[in-house]
Length: 230
Image (cartoon, rainbow, N blue to C red; front, side):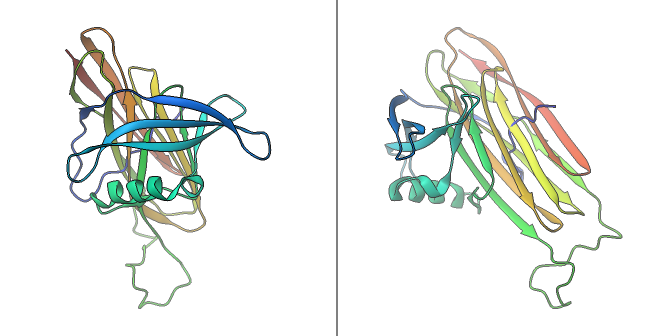
């Protein structure tokens, strides 16, 4: 089963939307091990509303898809990623696997609490009562409007809770072409939020379908949406 890109919902659910972007540019490099790297530059709006070009270093996997590793990015890219996530009270998603398909790009943010079953009662984080807990996943697919022939980004989201250790997996897709995937393993019960932005472009006026799907060990959630391209 392919998991649509995870976007975790914060305490107040994010509204999924599409915002315009301009051109994405790529150049190819090889690292010291001979691994192919795509240096992808794309324009994004900063907190002041000014458009800035942000460079991402994306490693090409064996299947040809592009892997984003926060720790492999330059300082300015890391800072932009931090600032973008902080708007929603989150941090850059790191430690798991973030993949972009084809010519798309985007960002993943998360806010996750891991629960230590051996921690004392005065643990700072509220302990998860495994006997009474309910495993759940709620998702929100991208929706809204966008201009024809212009790159735009869409946001999807998910909120989750797992009463056992295991993997969080998910994805977001727009028009069946523009997709991003995320997965991460947690060694204890966990809960939290995850959000993702993915870039797409549509060259003819029409409605395009979107989807978000996420899974924890005992539960999955999925949702669909529509973007009007005019």
